[in-house]
Amino acid sequence: MNSIVNFPLFAALISVFTAQIVKVPIHFFSTGHINVKLAFSTGGMPSSHSAAVVSLAAAVGMKDGFSSSLFAVAAMFSIITMYDAAGVRRQAGTHASILNRMTRVIPIFQNGQEAVSTLKEMLGHRPSEVCAGAVLGLVVSILLRFIL
Image 1: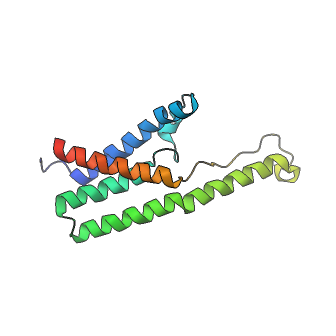
Image 2 (image 1 turned 120 degrees about the vertical axis):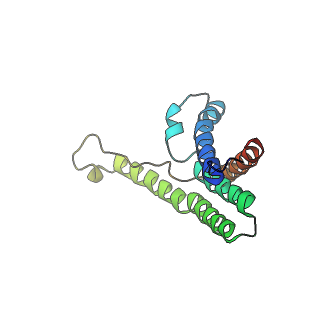
Image 3 (image 1 turned 90 degrees about the horizontal axis):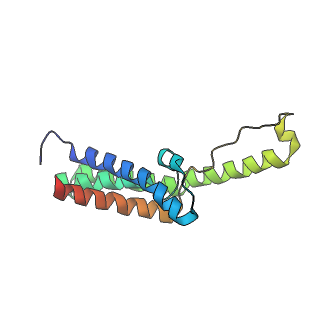
């Protein structure tokens, strides 16, 4: 493999890009509507965060060995990131959804304004979205390893 290319970084970036792009056709096939904005937003199927960190960990393992300290760091980073995406960030999105509903229904929250800004609700991921991102990241790293 060409030493100029940082394989782990390249694999992680390709995984993020792929995950973000594939959100659009997945959404279309599940809803029948095209939403190009999904390619530039957080949340959705698959998780690009999961794809990136798993791809990074897999590429580090393939390059430096699965018993290396660097792989251990990358693997722990992956676990924490995926746990956060499915846990904390998902709960923050749920809270945003509830707050948005409250501001629409309860007049005191509107402060006399007609249009109240809404909080972003699509922040985290369902476990299936995290798993799909992880599988995508692993596949991308394996394919790139054979290509490069």
